Image (cartoon, one colour):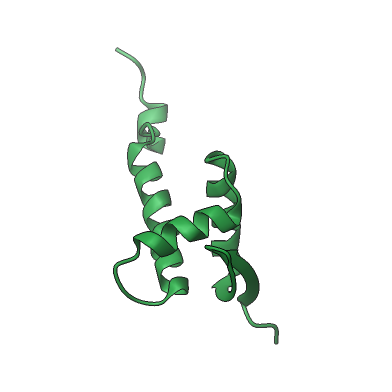
Length: 89
């Protein structure tokens, strides 16, 4: 059975390191770096320089989680199915 964790090499602050993340987190990182018009290495470098504790993989997971949570919280509310069928007054 294939592991859901993917290990990739990436250059951070001029040195090569390996990072193990689930594919969903790699995809999230690619989306975020694209939206910020930066490379994946630049984004990982930013996360690395701002982390308070823990390993790099954990810091990346927390960053991606926080990014998408914030984006979801700031998104316009979608009507619930009950609101969609309610007649307008």
